Length: 156
Image 1: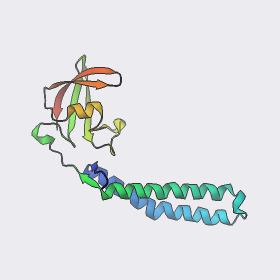
Image 2: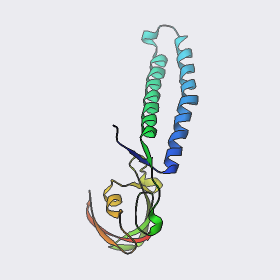
Image 3: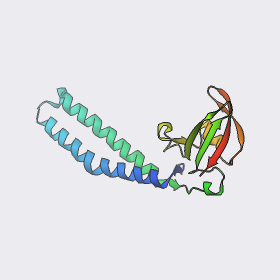
Image 4: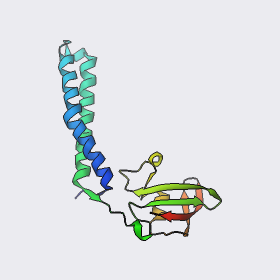
């Protein structure tokens, strides 16, 4: 059996939208590009045809990957409302050595992790260390740049 893919409800919806786009819009686009490229003649030396076929293969691969993720998706329910950090929780925390800057992240599965969007994986050093914590907890985290101590300020 394949491994579960942990997703939020929103993450699942985003994957479903992407899958629909790839299947019903992007496939048509690529099929048309291949058709036009074939009209240029000799396929053995046709760069447009080769590029379109390569893009088609990449799109089909992405479609299969998304379908597989959705097949094994487990939707997380935010249980952080009880004040304890879990998958789906948003957490405000500060570094113990500089409490002036509050960081806010949502704890999600690896598929949805995007630091710039404020989403960290439950498998990342900080995400994993925050799981099961509550407001006021101090936790030491081993990161690639060394050990840091963080303080949980809010769980929601």
